Image (cartoon, rainbow, N blue to C red; front, side, top):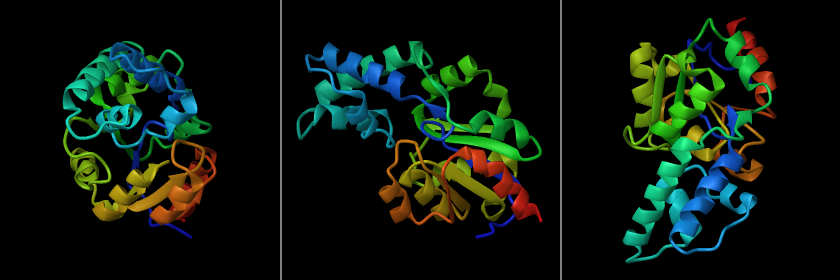
Length: 221
């Protein structure tokens, strides 16, 4: 389908713009070791990503009622380690950097559930921190799928939701964008499964960000 013209494009980070699996898994396993738990494989940890660092650790620890102290300790260890090693192995997802460089005629923003310190570390390592007119990260307010995260990013851009696209690899991105009133573009190949993305009912689905620029240009016609 043809989407409405986008004055602004909001991107998720992990699994959408960057492949951060190895660094997230390393930080998670560091945290698990610190609280006496065995490591998990990278694929298992990747399945826990999408709802913020605290939920990631809760899933990895399989915590239940009364587990707050160990979760708090694991989260603190995760955040401290990850802030120092957020981009040791992180690379661009296919088509991501080309898309950012081609879309300089749009207002661009980042809306991620990743903790802010780690988010900024990744952007600094990749040399793209100045690319975004707004950055909303974990800890700044409600996490996606809450639409307030999207609204918080649109404010500094002075763009209405109906004039913006939310682009992401997870159901959280699609649900947040739709609830905020934006058009939504799902990208396969990240942390979200094809089934999860389809169930979120995006307006459009791409196999990778390689197709995003053509989709934007088509909306201008």
